[in-house]
Image 1 (spheres, rainbow, N blue to C red):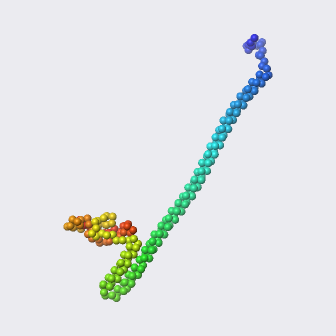
Image 2 (image 1 turned 30 degrees about the horizontal axis):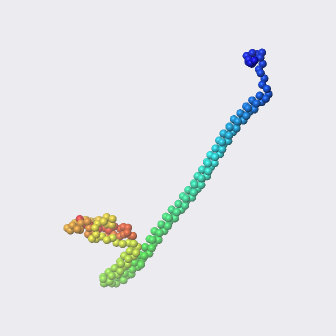
Image 3 (image 1 turned 120 degrees about the vertical axis):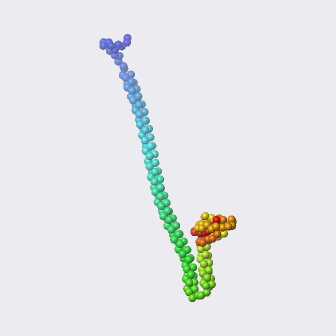
Length: 202
């Protein structure tokens, strides 16, 4: 005979205590299983957060280290730049002093020549003295890398010559050639120190 829940005179069948306990235990186990899964998910998320935090800290530490290294290199470069500028300035200064010091004996020769020529009436001896001083000066310039530019009789070359006049010529071979050099040019260590001022045939 089956139980009819709509009949108030019929009583619901009673479950025994063991079945109830089994249902309770099953529900409890299911609850624990859900909680375990949730805890596992939470623990994994916390672990991921810890790993990300550690990565962030490592990146910040690396950035701070690289920043310090960059600032150190910048300071070193600035010191190197200042030292190089000072050394270059010292080299230029010392080179200028060396050249000027080398000119002093030539100035001495000029002074002695002027003093000696004051009582001389012979122009040839004065000229001879001037030529000796001139040769000494030219030799000194050559020892410092200064050499004259060959001009007269050479083809005009804008790299070394500055045309200040054009001279009409009848000989076709003279056209474009340097006819005269009013002001001699010089190079220093193969670099133009002063262009030669020349007259060019046309």
